[in-house]
Image 1 (cartoon, rainbow, N blue to C red):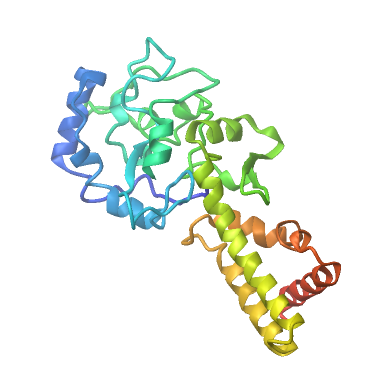
Image 2 (image 1 turned 60 degrees about the vertical axis):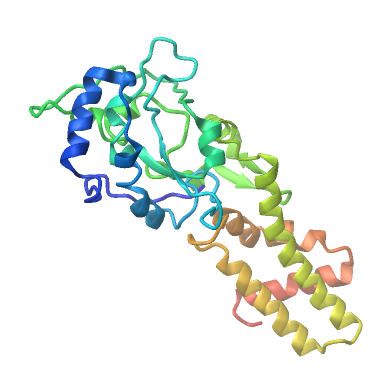
Length: 288
């Protein structure tokens, strides 16, 4: 999960339509019985969201564009809230730009209508002169909505990088057992098996490549300069994995920042461990 910058005041032209305004007005009377039109909130935002999110899920950072299409997810659920029998959902922000995120099907299906809070839940919106929800009851970063104290993190509002750490086994953990991080991991299933396996695959491919260079050097298949050059290329790839447009870029950050924990300590030979550690230090100094 990484932070994404979205200007809530600049709505995509494909979403800012008379049809959308009419549907918002209709939802105010029909509430969660409203026939929510995905062709408006999805088709009007999908392209813009894919660009903002680098074609990755806003929760787990998986890029599924080669397989199942991405989904437009409602941060505050448009229908009834799970475990809130009397709440009718946040129907009035079903077409709201700041409430729409990009999600993979797995995270979206896990989250569904879960939206736990520790503050006071907003039940109905206040309206402006045009008869539409006012900014305090529309914008996801408004004071009114922030007072709900949502446990689910919002990647466009929260500095989500400050809430999590990744471990060498591919799992994500809440930093200092932060309750919002713990709940986000739980709601979205951020430690589901297939996701952990995918993160580990990224790590293991790099580790295998390093060990292959060391093996070829030890057997005389390649010379020291060739091994040094090969390992440098691996380190460069590792560095690039932190970029926002890569899958699991936050996991990539931890692999790079905690190199010894993720790589060096997993190399069985003491001699090779020392060599890799020294080579990485040289790389950090741009001396490799």
